[in-house]
Length: 270
Image 1 (tube, one colour):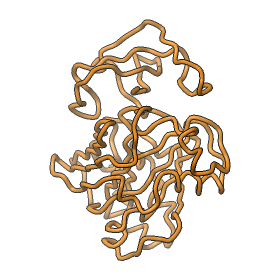
Image 2 (cartoon, helix red, strand yellow; image 1 turned 60 degrees about the vertical axis):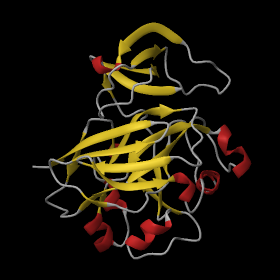
Image 3 (cartoon, helix red, strand yellow; image 1 turned 45 degrees about the vertical axis):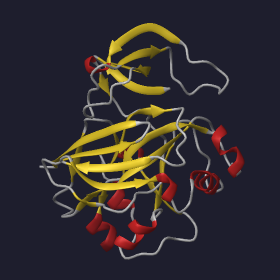
Image 4 (spheres, helix red, strand yellow; image 1 turned 90 degrees about the horizontal axis):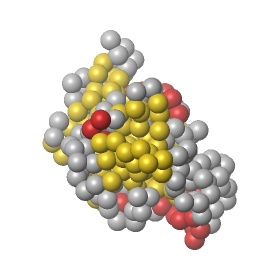
């Protein structure tokens, strides 16, 4: 089931996306419809989603970030070849960092390059986990119980600031540096799916989640041993090799098999 967060006029709603057409871009998906949900989808696991009866063509609504997390937890260097391309080795344990909730934007929204502060901003396409329940100290065998679904993400990074600062908060934390979308897929087996990132239609990253250094059960168990996760929180699982710079005027698309495509344009701050 695909769960979208969307706006009709000034009203923000959740809905179930129906149809087989692939999204043509980050803001529309010709042939798809969205059936409105009563309330929100993050209720008890055994509670069925209730529909209001209202239905809209996806092209007639504005798709938003599918969730507004209290926090975005991210994992660094979780593909061997990506670690190597930046001159690092893959860590023996997951490397955790945080992105602020204010970095989150949705499909079709603009990534704003802080061009007064950074001269090198990179894309990083990733699989994102969306949590469905409050959890802490989750053993690997029980990880599926706490995952609501998966979405596409772009861990946008000011690469020059990451190198100069010695820690990653500023480089990863600018407003607009965490695009998510286009929706949450709740039925995905994410152990081995293709992930590609394209800039202006040219594929730059092409890998599979089976190549994660630390797999999804390991990541969730590791992170929840450190902090309490709230419903709607997001975990970025790492980016494969092929990251590179983006500039104003570029269009960046992260596509994940079984989910869809997240597309964002790039603009300068001034």
